[in-house]
Length: 491
Image (cartoon, rainbow, N blue to C red; front, side):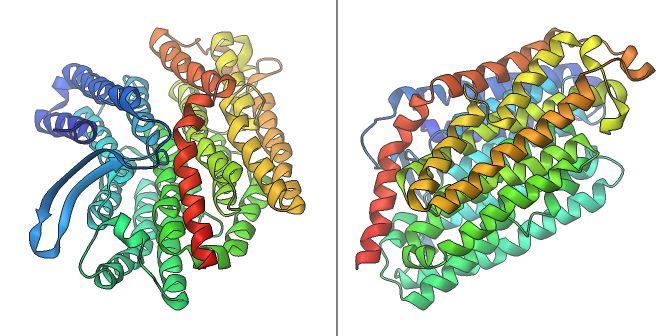
């Protein structure tokens, strides 16, 4: 079994074992087994980095076997510079979520941990799949564990939020399935994604394919105006669910644009780039303003995620190396920062059982260690230089300015709005005198929570101070993608 298969199936296998354990009297063993599964799942991704060859855009760690012979469907895996970093990122966030949920979940612990481990393997499958049907199976299968995580362990309106999440994402994906079947017929009976990249498609076919993929991926990002499911889901989801949703699941849609929309329909991608740029700027500016007026911390960070993901799609569709690489870096950075923001809110919620900003004030007086971490993550969310949040946004702004000064100027305003809503929330929650008895009785983070926050802080600072390992991996693949799109335009 290859390294990518191990990265996919190790967490899924551990998740299946956890589901079989049953009753909550096994909860202590379940937690340790879940931690073991997530750690092993992360360890098997480390050799991928050690063995990854720079300077080539070819797929690496390729595995290919017959799956459904009649329809020429293969179990076909591989990663390049575009998809590589999302494999260890997914495994890393899974470890973080398992540790962070150690005491927060007390009912159906085996099902909760099992769902997260299975979800982890499925998401890695999405980033690794090189067969259209395999990609679709993994892409859709991720809905099931997340639906259960929201619907079982969520808040008062969890059923509504879970149904909205499932319905929005499923409807868009049905159009993608039609597009995959069309490409299968056009290619003479192949589901190989690389083969689809070389198909000579008419302008009409490309446009229809572009919008079919847009329906699936824009909802997943989510782009404005199909973002309305995200705040509801984040508010109702348990802390771990919000962290994984923001850190990894939103990236599945953005990744789809790079793997499907741009290389398969390059002419249509260029023709409709103005629409993608306009929608991205609306997300960056308008949704940032919406975030400022939120009273619920989770909802504020949810809208913040929409605004930050707007940078990603903006970077992709300005079609230069700074923009696309910046969008990819922003995806990874947002994985660390948004996960940290939601887990920080979870620390407070576990103690006070409220996400309302007005329920807090002066937290620094009773939780100084935790406030130091929260300040770092808030600064990263603002895009402070030296943190992960700065690198991708700065690259996208530079790329946008290179393409069009006014687009660059408009995107740069997001740094102002991001600082405004993040620091406004931080001031009201953490600074000033102790606001009430709930805050007065707070206890600072324990050793387990300190460990989780430390891991995330190291990731945020390491990427912010030295992003080269990330950019070196993706540069050649990004250049090859842009070359493919440019040659298509010339032809």
